[in-house]
Amino acid sequence: MANFVYNEAKNQLLRGGLDFTTADIRVLLVMTNTTADTEDDVNTIGALTTLDEYDGSGYSAGGAALAGETVVEDAGNNRAYFDATDVTFTALGAGTRSCQAALLYKFVTSVSASLPIGFIDTGGFPFAGNGSNVTLQWNAAGILQAN
Image (tube, rainbow, N blue to C red; front, side, top):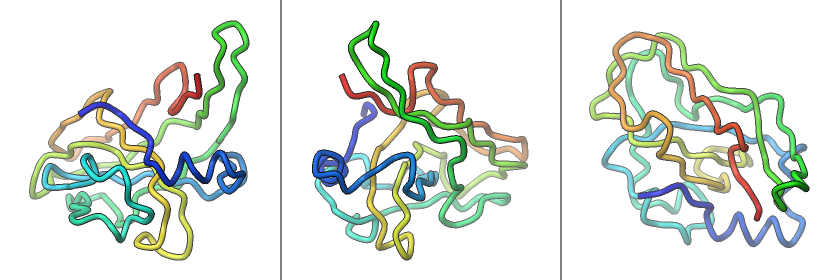
């Protein structure tokens, strides 16, 4: 499956309820049993049939908070994009299954109550942790784009 943005995130973005520069945006890793790649119409992470969050050593439930968030207008390419500093998971051990993707989300009060924003399975996925550092290196044209 290709990267996508969840429907409720699109709705909140257009209604002004999702500001990428002020919200607590985080990323978590999901394994191959997740249904996050097929349920683009859920409103919360808890509504996913199966999250299947990564369970290898060195990984903390809920993933990691993003830093350096920016929204940039790229007038030359007629788009705007959201970007942040690359995220490194240190000494990421093997999980029960391979890591399939990253799930970008707006943290609310708990992971379960949080808004899923985007499903990202390009740029090094899937992989199996082996005790090395794993860096999510975001696309040079941003994590998400509005064209």
